[in-house]
Image 1 (cartoon, rainbow, N blue to C red):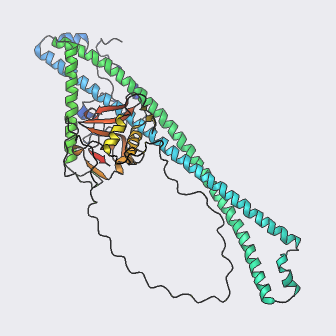
Image 2: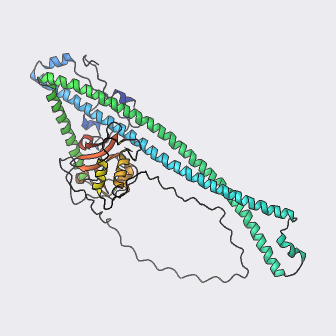
Image 3: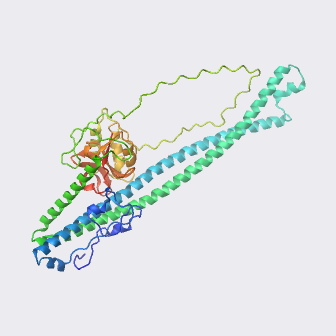
Length: 497
């Protein structure tokens, strides 16, 4: 591929323009990092990933060498192009993570629907068996009535006039009640069987729909991942060309310019993280009422900012918890009813036994490590770090034993510490007992990306401005600087278990 010629553009992120509409971002030239995200650090919700900027031609580089001011202006321009490309690459990664999360959540929903369909089918089968039983009883009763001219043999003494009228009346009442119960049980069993069979059919349809949704989400995730891979490859080629031009303009080496560009990237990332951290610490978490922890911790971006000790602090008592009111005295018991002169017939038995337990719990991913006695968040960190590199890998919807998605890794690691978290990133954040600003993050806290309540990625904070996470199929389970992902909707609050 040639990088020469005025007006030519590189292929950086070109494959990303075919991303699904729900996850893609605006299709104009990539703005600077500050413009790529909104004032709240949120990614655009629709559109396409920004296209690659132009690369200066050899003629433009030669013209820029004509004067010191022209050289400085061209250097500034190229630095801006590199910053735009870096921001666009972050956007491409964020889009792919959103698609991966959507597919993972679809797999969770599919598992739930299939479990519901299985339980509904079992209930329907039990109801059909009960219906067959009651149908057989009614058939036997009808057969007996037919053989005896429509009269049960137990009534023969009553109609023959042998006396003992009270005993015969009791017999008549018992037989009549038994026949009524048999017919009522048959009717109820038939209605229950029909209702549960329809419910089972509905559950199967829901499972089929969930399967179709999961297939569509998988295709979206595959496309997003392929586009992100192409973006990385193209950005690498573009960066190489621009760094060479910088070296030519400044009469230095490509190695020196590459190191300078890397330093500028890190500086932008750190500044962005510092701004996000400061903004989050200024107010309580929106929508939760969570207040900052009084024991302030260093910001995660600061080197060595994490506390080396990762013991889980005791959860604070809920704020403003009202005292339990004294129980009100129960009303005086109603007087016992007067005895009924004639005994009532036996109550009608429940027509359809329901042997299958309900309701359906959400499926618990297996396997999970056996809880370790006295486990803390440091245990969770150790387990997660132990899964970096081969033979462990990123897997859509994975919960182990070797393949994990982001929330599956978190769930598995905390289970080893005896803490059983829910399945998805959004649930894991929402159900945490404590939320604190990012500036107070401690090792073992959960960092999330996205906007509340629909987070698309979660990672375990290690301290020192780093996280361990199951990132994507290419990076796998890895340790990453928080600052490098601060432009991808990093949320300003963390969850603590």
